[in-house]
Amino acid sequence: MKKYIFIFSTALAFHNIDAQVGQPYIHDPSTIAECDGKYYTFGTGGGGLISDDGGWTWHGGAERPGGGAAPDVVKIGDRYLVAYSATGGGLGGGHYGRILTMWNKTLDPKSPDFKYTTPVEVALSDGVEDCDAIDAGLLYDPDQNRLWVSYGTYFGNIRMVELDPATGKLLEGCKPIDIAIDCEATDLLYREGWYYLLGTHGTCCDGVNSTYNIVVGRSKSVEGPYIDNVGRDMKQGGGKMVVATGDRAVGAGHFGRFIVDDGVEVMSCHWEADFYQGGRSVLAIMPLLWKNDWPKAGEKIKAGVYEIQSERRGYALEIATDFVRIPQERRMWWRLDPNEKVDTLKLQQLSDVEQGWSKGDLPVRLSDFMFRPNQKWRIEPVEGKGGYLGNPYFKITIDGTDRTLTAADNLEVIATEDFAGDDTQLWRIEQAIDGTYRIMPKRLPGESADNTRYVLYSIGDSSPVLKEWDFSTDNAKWNIVKHDF
Image (cartoon, rainbow, N blue to C red):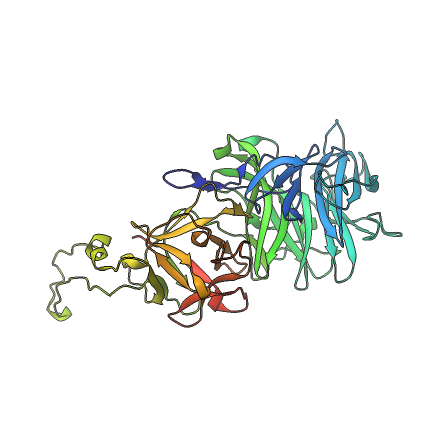
C-alpha cells in the first residue's frame, strides 16, 4: 500500500502547507505516473486520482478495472503497465491472492487510445503457504530491460519474481524468491549500484490509531539480501526508517518514487489519517532525499520568515539598500563589570530603515547575513495559482512589505515594489536530494509557457541571476534557514 499528503498554512488562508488540495482521498496509492502533462495515481478498490495542474490539486477520475487492492504502475516504452492484487490480505476472509498485470497505451480515460488489455496472473498464494499475493510493487530497469514485481504482507514472506518487460507476464522459468518479512506494501527501486527494498511496517486500516511507517534495506543484487543501516537483514525483520508520522498525519504507507529532474525527486505514499482532513486517508507527496546513499523523506517549505542563503558561499539574499548601523554603546571589554546586569539588545526593525529605501524596483544581491530587515524574506503560498508535485507556488517578499522577488528581463532578478500576482512573482521551491533547495520562477517575462529550466543562481559571491538548473554546482542551490527574528 503506497503514498502520502500535505496541507497549506498561512495565518490568513491555509491551515498547513502539507496537503495536496482538491479531493486527494485515496488508500494504497500507486507510484505517481505522468501522462500527457497530467499526473495519475491508482488506489485500492479501483479508480484513482488525477492532477491537471502539475501535481498540486487532485481529484477523482483515474480508471482502473479489476478492483482489488494496492496497485502499482510503471511506464515501459510508450505503454503503461499496471499491477494489482485480486483478493488476498485477509480480504474476503482469507489469504488466497493473485497478482495480475495489464497494459494501456494511455492513462487518460478520455483518450481514444484508452483501453486496458486482459489481465494476466503473474503470482498466486493459496491461502495456506507463508505468503499472501497482495500489494504489488513494480521495478523496471531500462538499462538491462528487466522487470520485477514484489508482493506480500505480514502473513508470511515478502516475495519477488521477474516478469517479461515485453508482455508483463511471468518470465519463463522464473520462480518467486523470499526477500523480507515483517512488512507489506513493498516497492523496489534501483539507484547508483544499489537495489532498495522499501516496505511498510506497522498497523494499517485503523485511522488515527494506525502505526504504519516506511522502512528500507538495500542490496547489490536485486535478489538480496536486503540489509539495513546497522546490518540487519530484512528477512530477519530489519529496516531503516524512511518516514513515520508527519505534520498532524499518521500512518505513512505505500512508498512511490518520482524523479522530477536531475537531483530533484519526490516520494509519494498515503497517510492513514490526516488530522487536517478529518482523519481521512490521503495522498501525500514530499521531497525525497538521499543521505549517505539512503532514502529519507525531506521537508516541505512552510509559510514563514527565512534567510535565503546561497550554498555557494553562505551569503544571504537581500534587497540592495544602504547599510544602516545599529546604535550601540561601545566600551572596552576589559573595562566591563562582569556582575553588571546585561539587557537584551534589540534587532534592527523595518521601521528603523525603511524610510531610507528607494521607491520602485530594487536590485537584489548577496551579502553577509546580519539579521537585517532587507534580508528577512517571507515565504508564503499563493491561493488559486496551482502548484507542482508536493507544493503550491509561493510569493517571496521582504517581511512587512510588498517588495517581491521577481523574475525580470535578461534573466535578472529584482525586488518589485508591489506583489501583483504575476507569474514572474510566483516561485517553485523544491528540496533537492542533498537537502538544499532550488528556487525557480513560475514564468519568465514575455514567455507563454511555464518555466522548467531557469532557477535562482549565484554567478559570483554577490550576484544572483537566473540560469539553467545544474545539480552538480552549488551555484544553483540554496538553504532556507529559519531564525529567531
